[in-house]
Length: 235
Image 1 (cartoon, one colour):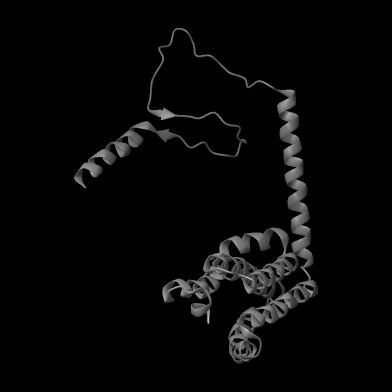
Image 2: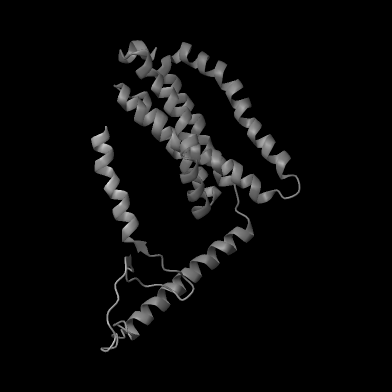
């Protein structure tokens, strides 16, 4: 159908499904960071909206590139958020039988694939592929309802509040310290001592007392870059 609709090659058309399957998995680190920052409830609602929006836009796509962006990337990011929240929420709430709960939650992917395959085939035969995508976008919007039913644990809410409060207090202390001492104290070297030179460059920065300063050795940098023209000549 998509081959006839867009007149593209088989390899170009297959990228639509490839992106749709790959983007949710590749976006795992980004989605997990967002879930850790904003919680499972908000990210599930956002994922449902993104996936629904991607399906709706793909129903009106007029080129294969638009299908890449809407069906592959936008919908893939939304489904990635929903998948991460489903796994993380189980880990939040289950302590004793977490393995069993996670396995049951992962079974939903297989069950959904098993049920949606004949349903999608029926919708395509009845309403064409554009109508089928619109109907499926409505089913994806129901994930927002699932997100509204989620509730973050009390310990996670308290941890988020304490981290925000500590960050605000730390920023206020830094601002106060900068106002009280606008210039950094410097101790000039003694005049009777000869200056010593070394190949370490210490960049000035504002650090706490418990943080470390990492220096950069110029000798190793120059040695590394000296091999670049040699390799280019060898090629």
